[in-house]
Image (tube, rainbow, N blue to C red):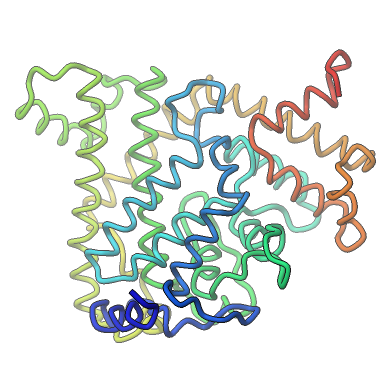
Length: 383
């Protein structure tokens, strides 16, 4: 199918408030259109083929990579978010290609060792504005990725860059600037990714927490959202063993949350009746959200995870080790730039040392950062 046919299909079948690739605000550097792919499809493909995307395989979600082979990584989390987001987008008449592209890109700015690494860099850079991974993600796609001779970065569309910068969750506090600050709200596609991200990390952190024995089913019984789904599973499959029941619970939780979200969001959209993507951006409220009761249940689940999982002594020990590695690497690189690779060191001719060092560390995987730490700190490790 030719690009023009795909663009025509979008106009005929997507909701009026959905982003249309033929109506994009465009790319920073003009490029010829592709004959078979829309602009949002090209954006998605550029993300998947980027170096930063591949590095997500060895970046922490909750458990550091060496803790086990079956825990979520930043990459598997990203793929799970994209999967959930596409289902929601399809049901709400939004643009699936743009939604998927935002989901695949939303964590490209993450540091090694998850939020512990981000906290460490934010502290180290506090005198020059700190570190925030949405803003870092924009640096990755606009500057740090080197794949094209005619422009820096990936030259993504405005709509995808807006979706990255306006990504919002408990951990994400977007710092809007320039053209992105002209409206308070993101597109519907970005709103979908925001909630899909929350659904994915809540449900899958429960799964990893139970698999690691950091959490127990007895603890989970204090959460009514959990108890309600367990009752359904026990009624349908009373003989299911613990392993199977855990996997079923994650599936049931995701299905319940996604179904509730779609029903509520459909009602809100019908009431607000946005006629364009700009109507969504200028609306005083987010249109993609849970019913009040489910939002409260989900909030209690998050509080439970903070209290019982993220504050668990195993998590705290991993966090302290992560911060130690980041602080030490930063200290060494700032003290002696000659230990940096030449292509990194040469960037200091154009940008500050703090920025270049932060970019270098933020782009590392867990295992590369740990290996660098050993090479630079351990006197008996070969360099």
